[in-house]
Image 1 (cartoon, rainbow, N blue to C red):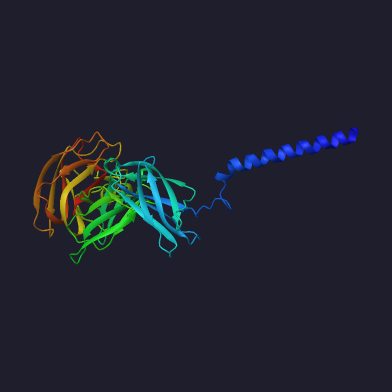
Image 2: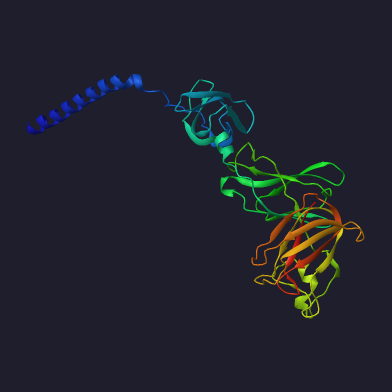
Length: 365
């Protein structure tokens, strides 16, 4: 009897549980989707390319042939754009224009022929504008050196951390045609071999706010300053005297270094002292820079400069004062900008009967 009662109780409990499960199934039946929920293929490997007040969104189309459209949301779903997805092609792209300058979060959803929506995909991007433009710095030029057959530009540091990646140089070539050459920001120097003589060049710095940017930003063009003439082909063709020894040669005054010297003959010379330089070609001269021999105060106090096109007829550029107590180069502007192949320096007065000078440079076109 006990066993019969036990088994009867077990059967009753099972029947109660089955009845309860049936009622529960009936309750949730309305929420069950037959065969499960189907999600269209989502946007694969999306990329946001920054631009000037715009962003280009692109992604791989993927293998789902049922996709017909996509929707891109930004500003916390406050703004959106519908993108049609063609039946063929590997990449889907859409450019959002008129975007205020800031960073954005974009959400992409794709839709199929039945209107079903994919899992959302989020991607971050940025739009750049006047704020970024105003932060751009023009790469400085440390020196522009004019050789007989080329110019060499020595660049200062570029603002690479802010996106500087190149420099454009605009000039007129020897055929009279405007040219623009682009040099990487990593270049410390740039060489141009076909620039027309007697003219300047202009330069600007080229920026990309990031490596994927679809728009390029530029600084304004800057006109170059006068060139430093290379003394490579200069020759001393006349001079007053030089003291014996290679360390005293007059040629040292055009070797590009104030650490060497021209030393006039001690005990066998007196003011005025002079030397004449043949630059090899005709130049337009805008200024000279004179250096004493480093840490040597036996230079002149006053001097005269003259220029010539033929080494026969000379133009007096004036008399100038020189501070022989400082090592820095002292610049002398020549407002008349004479054309010359030759120039002459005449030392007029100084603390000794002889003269000691370090170096002279000339600038122009």
